[in-house]
Every structure is written in structure tokens, then in C-alpha cells.
Length: 139
Image (cartoon, rainbow, N blue to C red):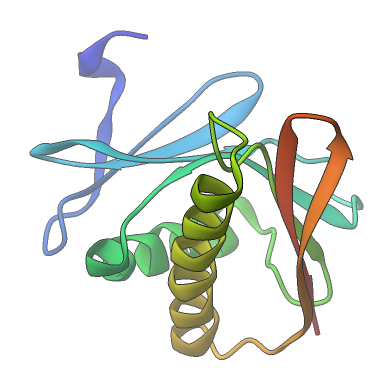
């Protein structure tokens, strides 16, 4: 995708968005590493798939605004859904998996707190060897 496909969503936090036939993507102006890709779900689908979530704990406010925008504009909230963050680490060694899990958990706990969401389960899943996902049950 070309750089000019991005649309500014929130000036105050530099949130920008673009979309294609498969996903809605969020980034931040001036921070090419921050990236969230939410796969375009069917309206009645009970799982929201996040195929990329490159956000550090210091950038959580941008993730909050991205999920707030996704819920309001796309009409797909996280309440009552299962959130699956796919393939959280490129190298599946134990230290990297634990580190990636801890960072993602810290980010999503803050996102849920800001969006007034409660979760009932938050766990690591290994759907097949070499791939680790995070699964979150949102009440």
C-alpha cells in the first residue's frame, strides 16, 4: 500500500487509518513502527482477529483510540467477543514468547480499562508448532 492511503483519524494523538478488502489498519504519524491490523470480520462473528499489533506500553493511548475508532466507526465492539492476537512473536523461543505476551497483556489491559471493558480469560495459545497467539475473552 502507498503511504498516501492513510487518513488522519485523530489529530491530537496522530492516529491514522487505512483499509483494504481484508483489514482495517491503524498507525501513528511520525512512528512507522506502530501498527495495528484488525482483520475485517463478519458482523456476527464472535472473534475479532488482530493479525498485527506492534504497540509498546508507552504507546497504549494510541491503541486505545484505534480500538475506540474501530468500535464506533465500524460498529464492531469488543464487548462479548473473543479477541485473538495472531502470531505474537517471530522467533518462538521461550524468552521472546514471554516478553511478547507480557507487552501485549499490558497494552490490552490498559485498552480494556480505558474502554470500560472487562475480560474473563487472557491466555497464550499455540495453534500449531512455532506459532503463539493470545486469546482474550471479553465480557
